[in-house]
Length: 436
Ligand SMILES: Cc1cc2nc3c(=O)[nH]c(=O)nc-3n(C[C@H](O)[C@H](O)[C@H](O)COP(=O)(O)OP(=O)(O)OC[C@H]3O[C@@H](n4cnc5c(N)ncnc54)[C@H](O)[C@@H]3O)c2cc1C
Image (cartoon, rainbow, N blue to C red; front, side, top):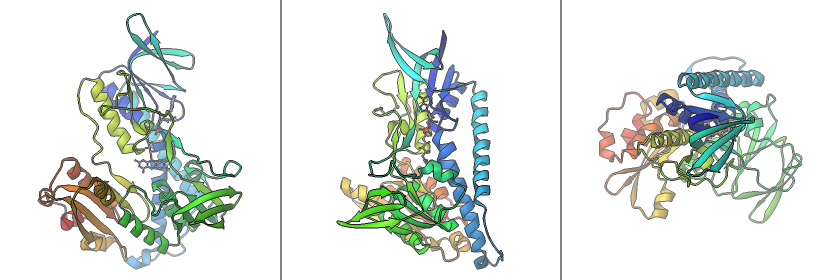
């Protein structure tokens, strides 16, 4: 019989964060991972996608270098080398996670774990089964993550379509790519393949891409991507798929689109459905917690990490509830877009009065210095008392500067308080101070 204070199932951002923190804080911790440490995020999500996008950015910069007085003749790329570098980055970071587990004295078990709750005479007991071994644990955190959602589109099952997994490992550039779904993942892949020269078409069921993000900025990003050659079909449903033909329907009109490759990017769903949690990530069972994509409501690695911290703190007897007030959403496309806090759509639905402050990024000296002919916008939504409710940025490096706004929103700061902070000059982040 082996006893543990805590078992964590799933070694993605939620799982490895929970295990590391618990181990460091003295809990005898065991982590089960059936595939690869790092989960979707490290092995087939955030990190590989951003590594590929960085190669695309370098390629784009080299091609664009004449605008900056630099001559780069015969710029080209080798997709198999781009993929090889991506794999190297993943291996390096995976080794880092393994080292963290060792340092925190977390026992890592490679294999699929199954949970059994056994009724004892006086109390319940949580048992984990993995590879014919039984582990008894006092507390359990489920961090089993999510998987690609496959909608029931006629013909899809019989077609060799890509999900994000295949798109990240493909070594031959398709001549054309039709992406089903204009969410964050779909748009990032659209940007990557478009930059390398693939003819990209995005089919989105809703009236705008990037559902949940600022609608105006999403439209502006779509215009930027359209200028680069990406075609968008909004308010359009994929009716059926047959080999290289995709039948779409818009306002009752049907059309067939030909494509060399289909990429399905219509969302993700939790691997373990139906997990409901409270603000400490505790499920209905007081000794069982769930964090990350497993809960199904944020599907972001940075949310997963913070939820894992909240869960472990609660297990240790500390009440540090999870807050969803300032979870940044980021699209790492060329150009980037990011937002945090409320959007105008949400404020209107909630009936909250707000004012909009907006400036082009060209008000930032650094942005102008680094973005020849680049467009961008910073939009800040303020409540009647001056509280910052939402910040939305289109333009590079939105992903890096959005955290300033996230901290301000989480802390309930007023515009005048954030404006009174000293921002380093020249930085693109100064646009936030300028816009306030
Ligand atoms: C292409 C792509 C790009 C993305 N980009 C971003 C991004 O830029 N930023 C961002 O924040 N998010 C991004 N995401 C989302 C991000 O990857 C997830 O939000 C994140 O991985 C969730 O972490 P997690 O720990 O909850 O689950 P996961 O990372 O899914 O990890 C769950 C782990 O649990 C394991 N597991 C499941 N069941 C068992 C079991 N019974 N026994 C043992 N092991 C089990 C799985 O093998 C898996 O390794 C992206 C996702 C994709 C697909």
